[in-house]
Amino acid sequence: MPTESTATFESSLRTFDVPCTVTTVDDFPDALDAAIEAPAVGVPLDIDGIDVDDADVTRSPSTGQLADAKTGVTPAALGVAAHGSLLLQSSAEGTEPVSLYPPRHVAVVRESDIVPDVRDALERLDSEFDAGRRSAVFATGVSATGDMGALVEGVHGPGDVRVIVVEGR
Image (cartoon, rainbow, N blue to C red):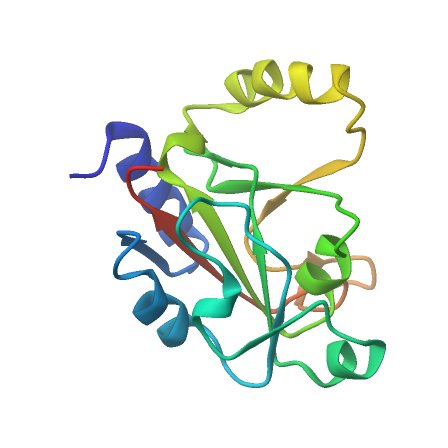
């Protein structure tokens, strides 16, 4: 049963037309298959019991595979329930390009990593920054810019975002 933070997170994501699937570890492969459009690329998810190897996802893609990908699959370090935001951290495996270049981004987050608000997220980040991780970005919905007048989506990143929440992790 989803927690209150998970329910709020799902509701916040809906305001941005971001589909969210809450799933178990056992059902994760089916949820991931339903969320991706091939060809898909990804990075290790670092979530016990699941990984991108559970689906047709190329791990550690080459530059050409990244350029051809329609979907990128990455972990999200946190979900911020009040805003439907995802905290995406840098990684040696290439989380940033995999989350930004393909037209669709599928973010996978542990249910236990959904926090109520930004203040809680920043408190959790303190220990990460103390440990030397310095690069992280909050992403909310699809990429959008109004630099040239009317709002345009998908210019500086994905035009389609999907979230998979893994229960019990």
